[in-house]
Image (cartoon, rainbow, N blue to C red; front, top):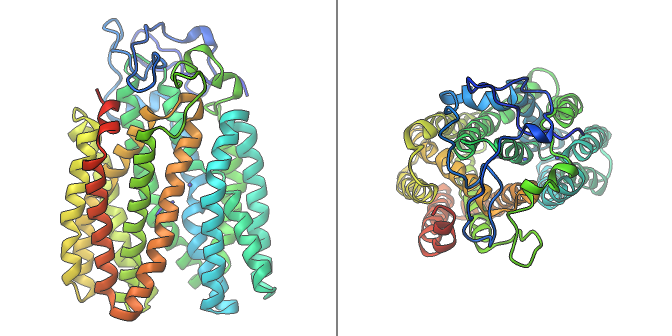
Length: 464
């Protein structure tokens, strides 16, 4: 699954007395920030940045309902551009498999696609770290241009049947340079809500919106790659990805919401640090969250391998069955903020993991596509609330000026888990059938639930 999340000072838009944003896409001067009084932030030793722990200002009206309040922060252009810029991350794995399989066989395709995933898992946190230090604008701009060029190089080497090593190197470098639009978008929403008197509420809504965009791309990406391979050419998915990242990756980089190094050193944003005086990234809470993303990736990868084994290698049937999980997850993501906005993130995470652990159990008994489809539809209802809670807790656990790096670490955890799950479950399915692969899915769900219960102390401190 997914997945992906990077310069005048792009501080949150000035608020009018009516509570609406003034000129959402215009960078706002530092003096336009609302005055707030920071309150102590548990686990960081100092007061948090405004918007991360302050009580709502009674003199300020609450934000508008639903997504309208989120769009008041940055306008419609940010979610639209970020969606189109993150779509290649969902298209490329399937597009790579389809192209290399037709030219060099399934064995070579697995190696090249694995190199792409490995590159993304390694390069994601590095890009997030550089973006936090240098500013997202220049880092994402360079990454988008280089990534588009490397995807084009991968297409050329695959079509020309160049040595497998050359194709794998191109794929690994393409993975390393993925601009991490999804994780960096989440860090932008956190920065935009910072200083707003209702910032925490808006961050929750924004992360719900971002989870929905991730799920839609998760469903649409592989489908686009398959349609283009069938109707146009097996290289169609990678060519489309190169074009999308070259155009919308650049637009995402240049969007006024891009945080800059100046923003990262602004006084309001340097408060949430470790007691030693430097930004502490790998806190106990964030380590727990990274562990949960690895287990969630294991859940995705093993379930996907099991579905492919159940479909007996028919990619059309497998893709249709698997897409149902993303569809119901997108729906639950939309409903999460509205139905559970008042529930603490830690409790919400536990409930989502409990639901996921229960809903996965029917997979152990399925023997055909229809029961598997219905079971995956139920499982999807727990996926988005789980991921929204994880990323919401990460927003509270990470230092503000290293938020991009934190989000990319979580995304890399998902990728690593998916790779391990696909490899292990694929071997289990080949030897013992799809039920063995689904058993690994159930184990991953149970381990995630146990982790959230036994290592809950650091997470509870984030929500006090």
